[in-house]
Image (cartoon, rainbow, N blue to C red; front, side, top):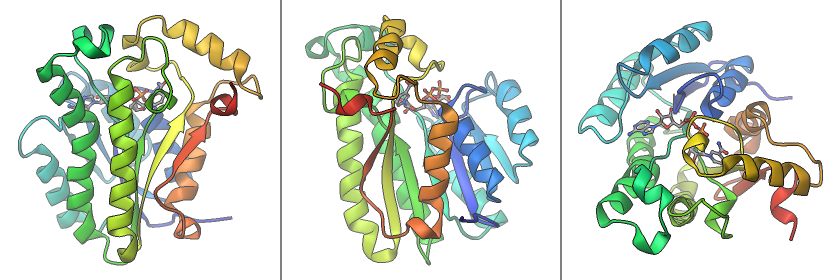
Length: 254
Ligand code: NAD
């Protein structure tokens, strides 16, 4: 129905084959997109580089958004190699373990700002650098979770962090809509990934989601990738600012 042929896409957040970003990378590549893929650091590279090579990524490089200059280096490379960008996919989040496992009201100031910087502000920094590379419009996606708007046991400080991410998506979409740049959050139901393994009692969340969701199916990274690919297409250009649940209907149930 739609093609992403030749569309230039930056995908940040692949750690391994379970990553939501990997589901997105595969789906966009299958529709013809050209990819730039990053990995966190030298320890992550042996896990991510083979995946990037498997999809024939044009650009492969490290990116730790907490390291000064690394986001800029990725966008410099994109400017030199491609001269433009059509789609940005930001699929990263972080909170220090002690803060993630504690009560929200006990979260340290340092942990709070680190979680907000890596999980939210880095998306804004990337959108700002993407803007001049999207003169004819484009799409910026990040990944949120239902714990942003409802209290989900053990999700703790990531709840307020995802609430901020979703609000940032709305403001950025209002600011960039006139330029044809759409901004969205995808909101998958719980998925067994490496980041998820840092959340206490995550198995209970998976079981609960599967039993409560009207479809009784957990979301898959393929489900997320399919929605990401559509939102990246020009056919979706009049959609912006949304938080798109991809969760078998889990979030509509009481
Ligand atoms: P994942 O562990 O596969 O991916 C998380 C990624 O964040 C990793 O690639 C990691 O390297 C990256 N990251 C962390 N700190 C970084 C930094 N400083 N710089 C650059 N990258 C950094 O897990 P995932 O579940 O695919 O997570 C992707 C996104 O999806 C996250 O925002 C997460 O909150 C969100 N999400 C996950 C679920 C779930 O149940 N797994 C549900 C909804 C939303």
